[in-house]
Image 1 (tube, each protein chain N blue to C red):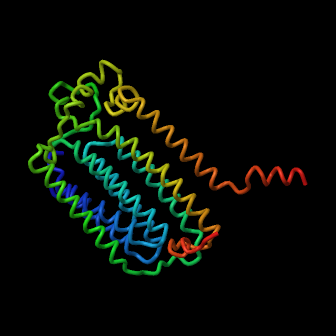
Image 2 (tube, helix red, strand yellow):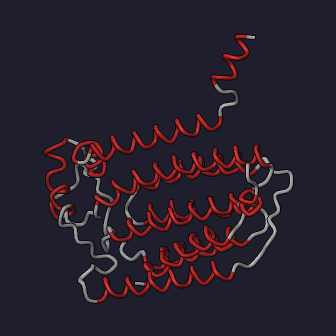
Image 3 (cartoon, rainbow over the protein chains, first blue to last red):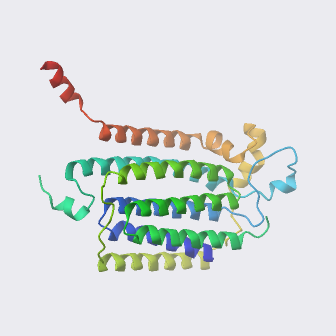
Length: 115
Length: 185
């Protein structure tokens, strides 16, 4: 139960960073931390006590098949991690453009400007 | 490995401390390094929980995240961040944390959601039993992402392609109109 609590703490740290900080790079770091927390939570749900990785080789018997951890969350988290990287690349390129245009990372200064 | 709880708790506490440092440090470059430390600890945690594919992917992605974020922060000559306290944000985060704990207690307490270490595996049992005979893939995760749920992977590739296109469109130096103007002049 404590692992779920620590996951929730991690998610809340990411949300706090996203909401409270004015620096855009800090906001991106908050999104990344939330991403980590959610992926970790999904993998923890699929863990089985004394489990082994779901890979079959010559020594695998039906009894070992029962000890496999849940492969379904792993397959979906694999997708989620790569999409997280794509989203991060898009966010950082937006930040680079904003910095070239306004010369600052401070969100409160950027939102003051009206064109 | 029979009991992974002590190692897992150590890694999780390390990750929480690393994220606190990343959130509260005044230097942007050290914040980026701290969030990368969290990511590498996450990779070790995946390895510990019997997910080697995820651990490898997380490792590669983490290196790329570090490179991309440093590319984003290196623009600044002065990477210091001024601090300020936003009471509303603190209150909102605490309310969110309370809601999270409340709903968590609800689903884990009475709704029959499984405890840590006892997954449901209602769908996955079919994949584990029929993965090798049906797809001839020794790795069950591979057989899921490339065969049973291949449309998910197709969607992932589309999303990745779209985000790369967006990043390229944002980052290119001169647009088509400007080049045509130069050609006309």
